[in-house]
Image 1 (cartoon, rainbow, N blue to C red):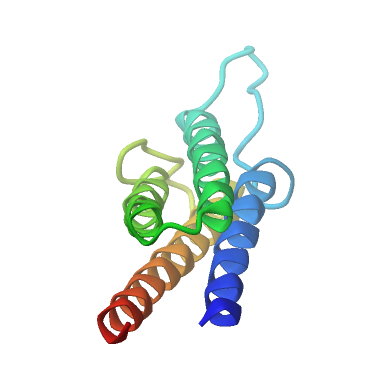
Image 2 (image 1 turned 30 degrees about the vertical axis):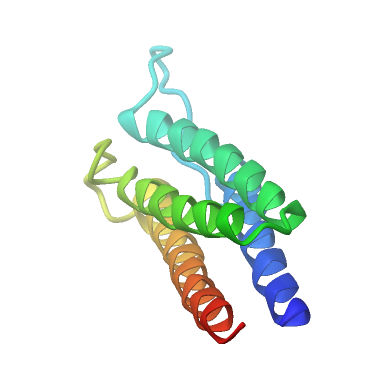
Length: 136
């Protein structure tokens, strides 16, 4: 149980950090325009970065927690916050319309995949925790 729990917690933490760092350096949004303005996708990137920071802190505190109730609360909140990250580029904040733009071709798919992985891992983790708590 402890080893499985640690693996789930570590995986969620690494995915959260990857989302946070990746959105800035690997799968970022469009840059500043010639006129000095930013496209909406830039603000989607910044929002995902902020959500990623929150996810990283919550997953870190989840790793430190030993209390079952706290872990349930952390795991549930991780799931909901990852859905917020999923919905940010393209649903909550519009991004570019051209398929060749980096925000459409790289940022949005990467954010959606990583946030869905975090969501699925948090739900599976929560189900395992409930099963193990019921057996104890």
